[in-house]
Image 1 (cartoon, rainbow, N blue to C red):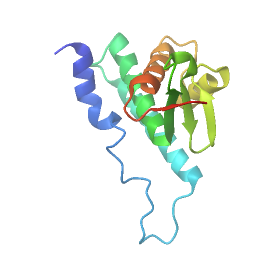
Image 2: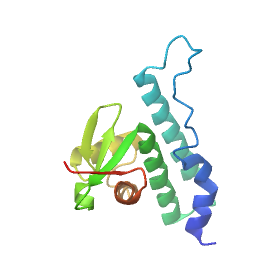
Image 3: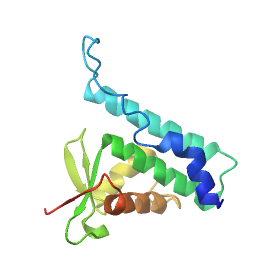
Image 4: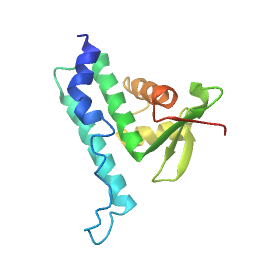
Length: 152
């Protein structure tokens, strides 16, 4: 088993976008549903907790740690919204993300989106790990089964 497979196997339960499918849904027995702000805050806190766990894991080193961070960010973004790509071009330049909390569709390569992600994960865009996050997001927008091809 190569190091990347070991990382994926170790962190799969934490990174799977479907592991908490029932979380965040309104329970009919509850008198009021959670507000979007509470849910957004909970997702952000959970993501930052996962990133701290990955960062503190001594068994993962170097680029494998950065790849695990990228995978965690993508999993969290999938819970916040959806990735899109241009159906005909299917390239990184047209890859997009719709944030269901902010009701905003952004190109992944736009400065505003990258700054937002940097702020969300508390990792500077100049940090050596940030290109791994960016690459993971772009790959998810193009090849992920939940990513949707559209004609903008």
